[in-house]
Length: 81
Image (cartoon, rainbow, N blue to C red):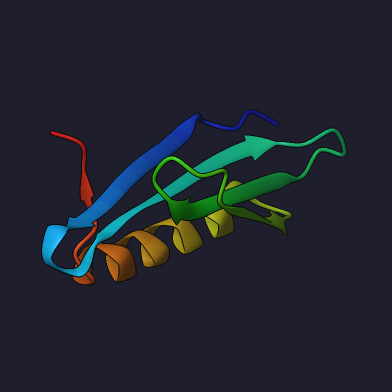
């Protein structure tokens, strides 16, 4: 099983609200032959939190990655310039 490398890092910064957040997504193969979507988020400069979703196919992981990315973009997250 070959998993394509997917890595996305986006940020949301609003000085008026003292907001500086990051959101990172990556798709990786795990040791059991499954595909994992790793989500990391938190305040910029902190360790933040992490959640791992395990899928039996890469297509399902990509679908969730795209859905999460659309949701975050609608809330003001943008890639680094």
